[in-house]
Length: 256
Image: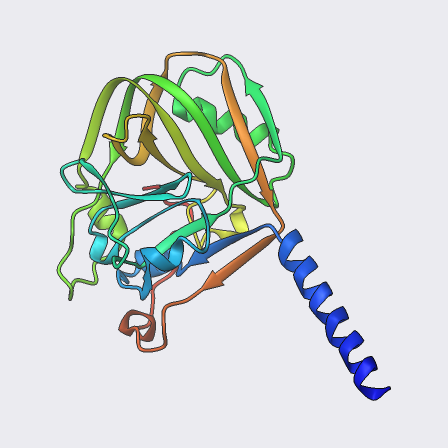
């Protein structure tokens, strides 16, 4: 009798746990933007491990050795020269946001001309400014400017804001691709850029980078939103020297 009760109890616990896993729709966020603002450019999570955390996302690689974009389960690296390659599974990441993209809703935004205009109008029509969203937009641009990253010395602790002033910029004309991004509420400004953080990759997978600015070729833009009900923050292991230093105040409103 005791064994039967124990078995039922364990099955019930397993059922509840499985249900929670199935219903939890979360963002897996590694490290923090404040860490980058304070020159922490190393992490211990690999591209191979990140594939288990999501099929959609963005970030960078250790020592800023390229920009990262994850789309449809593929993880890409944009090198300093702007070239795009599939990321080596053993590459490590110091910062990034990842999720399994499951569209909750889609809507058309009209009279959109620029990327800046798009962000301003999207902010006004979000279902909630206090929740997290994964944002996916497939669009064509008459012109676009993308930002890259230059690998830094392993001992360099200069904050990312300084490096972004001289980051490589890639300008493209008449290009179509996908915006991979996240809306982050203001209270999360120390963890990621707020309100938005977007990367872009072209349909032919030859161009990509951090989305800086652009002009849409179609004034009607279809936006896909995936609202998240959980945000998991994972920090590098306790031996990370960057996390042992004293950091300066957050620059939460900075955009890179």
